[in-house]
Image 1: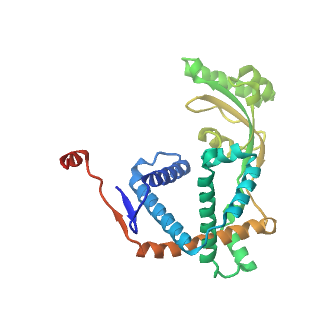
Image 2: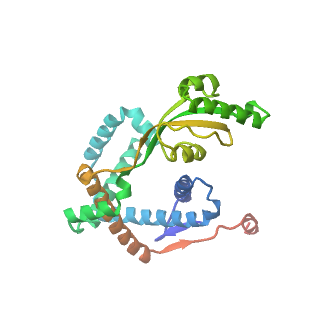
Image 3: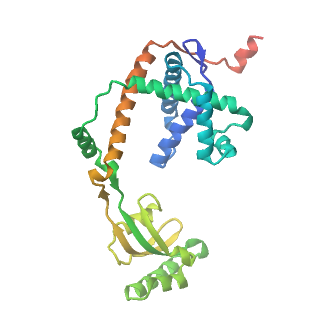
Length: 298
């Protein structure tokens, strides 16, 4: 469905890329496929691309482009930061003979950044009280996740057809651990994982399989878990370290809070401005003719 904004066509590939970004974001957050929400994601992608297009055009009308000398200085600085020409072009996805295109993109980015500064120029200053209120309202963003360190014995179900016998063997090993035998020594004799994977080091929720985390995050230090199962096999764990969730003190992260609050205000101000532009824009979306319709026209 081709889209035009104020008479200019929108590249369909930009919408496809934005759709993929949105869908990937939601699937990673929910850890499930979101195919049933494709229509919703596509609509959001179209609106985002349209607003970005309007922002760019408004910036081009309002802000003069930087001169070539300034752009070349910026490119030289980027090359240095990236470690050389090849690294810069690899990062941008351009070829070395596309320096003019790189210069145009950097110039346009500069115009957009300066235009956003202009849109947000009248935002009120941020007070200490504002910062502390924002910190308290968003305390979870400034809180470290709880962590656990655990040792692990694993027996794979792929190496046996007798699940009950393997479970009974794991129970006997667990009893030896409860009776005081060394976990690492027993793991080296019994586990199907290599020795370097016995100590799992520190981990947070979401880094390992749910079955393992549900057990280990409910245990006490030095506790031996029951034998528990996953789709891969049987497990025995011993927790050897725990770190509770901890909120960073306000004074420790005051500058971070300031940047977060400032950026949040800027994004809201920009969204309000773009919503106004969107209301007055002439956006047309037409159905592409089907193959049969196209054939009929010949």
